[in-house]
Image (cartoon, rainbow, N blue to C red; front, side):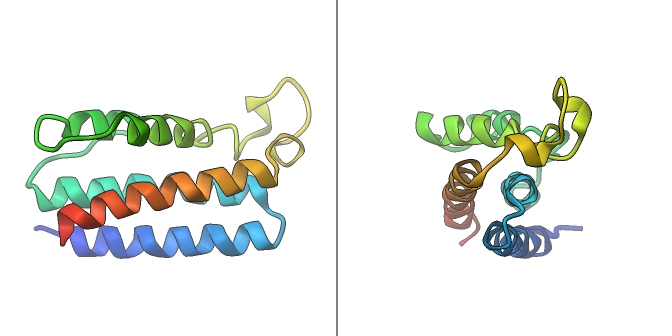
Length: 128
């Protein structure tokens, strides 16, 4: 069953959630939600194109689309940057000591949201 609309709808909601989390000062969660938004948007594209998307790396998911779409290097770099937040934004054992909240700040969440917005725009262009 093709469910790209469901995947993209949730991606948009995750991005909106990231914005709210950032406003509340939860920068680690805003960064993770941004990564999730991009991942789900990319999986929507895979659904739409009739492919299978496995894994959680936005960078790898974008690489897998290169056979079917032109992907700018900047978009690949945005995906690579977002992948940094998949585990370290959630778990203290991603750091020598302290918790994610101690290491991921407003600059990080702002960048993550911006990167996710770029990826969602790219995906929306394919899904349109």
